[in-house]
Image 1 (cartoon, rainbow, N blue to C red):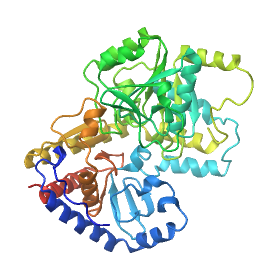
Image 2 (image 1 turned 180 degrees about the horizontal axis):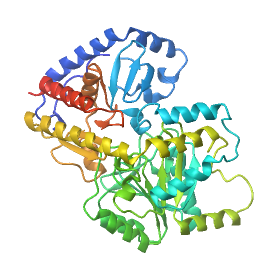
Image 3 (image 1 turned 135 degrees about the vertical axis):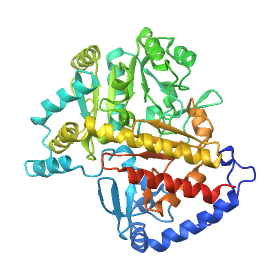
Image 4 (image 1 turned 30 degrees about the vertical axis):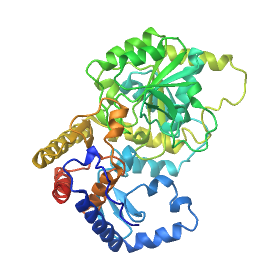
Amino acid sequence: MPSPEPAAHPSPTRTGIDWPRAQTLLAAERSAFDAAHPKSRALAAQCEQHWLFGVPLHWMNDWSTPHPLFVERAQGAHLWDVDGHCRVDFCLGDTGAMFGHSPAPVARAIAAQAERGLTTMLPSADAAWVAAELARRFGLPMWQFAMTASDANRFAIRWARAATGRDQIVVFNGCYHGTVDDVFVDLIDGQPHLRDSLLGQVVDVRAHTRVVEFNDLPALAAALADGRVACVLAEPVMTNIGMVLPDPGYWEAAQALIRAAGSLLLIDETHTISTGPGGYTRTHGLQPDLLVLGKPVGGGVPCAVYGFAADVAERAQRAKRQAPPGHSGIGTTLTAGLLAMAAVRATLAEVMTDAAYAHMLALAERLAEGLRAVVSEAGLPWCVTQVGARTELQFSAQPPRNGTQAGAMLDGELEGLLHLYLLNRGLLITPFHNMMLVCPDTQAADVDALVAGVRGFVREVVA
């Protein structure tokens, strides 16, 4: 693929960057990757014959490599590709493996359960322990299972509508809650627009979805004013468009507005579980009516959970009992299978521990401080944002306050070059924006290597 031409009007994100020099570096890095990965290249050619976009899931092609990187195995904080290269993994399946690849307790639980049955559409004894532990950690007494966080968010929205009898939801501009069609609405010049990337949807979801900017309390109050909003769906810290932290006091005021309007607060902790054992919610004292946790809760096994406050659970159950009999459209036959439940129990009991978080938070702080030092040394107008074990390098002098600001500081070309540069030096970070995770198996030397890698990159591209 030819290198893109330098922008005629350099982006603000490239202040201090010698872009022609960066493009020369990109060509060299692409050539180096291609030469070092002949087996991946051969597998990519085979997969192109039968996989749409050449990969089992099109997102697997979103890396900045000339062709997909094929994995041979992953363990702890490392993964090995089919060409024999070992890399320190700071992507960790974009949180799906936030507690490391194939944690030993989870691997043992899966192996043992595989001999006793995989799925039956009936509960196991593990279900009682898991529900009690979820209630203890997150403060919500009632729970349900799902296959993915996308499903959990979708189902929680429907329960909220059923419990309240209301049809509207509120989301934040730039949000991401999986493949839930309802949330694919953006603000452009203050007006709601269907997200251009929502393929194949013929329903205008704006009829039932309202979108406001994060940290904008007057806009939230206006969206709630007519009493039609069933729930506000939010990450407590926005993560997918780049991390956006709440202003001091924001959530305290926002929760008061939501309660006063008779709406429900649905918190999606799928990424912000990086904050602590009870997520951002327990660490910062939020009181959601519903809570979703996906990806990491099964140690890498596909599953998710969502919880209900007591009064919401009672209203949801009443709505279900009063509805006509038949398929509700909530849940699938593989949901809460024996294998997934065993994995969740092992993860909660032996992997998502206080000790694991203490280790991760300390290393994430070390990473954030190291990256800030690199930025300061180079005099670049960049900042570093941290949410627990999650750290992000952002191409702006100040952290963003909302999705519009976060979107303006994204630079796919510059991000892609950084990712490829690090990948060629044994370091893997998330392929979109500059998100980096540490896990219980990550070591201080791994963090220092990542900081050194970013420092090397900066020295290559700074004017």
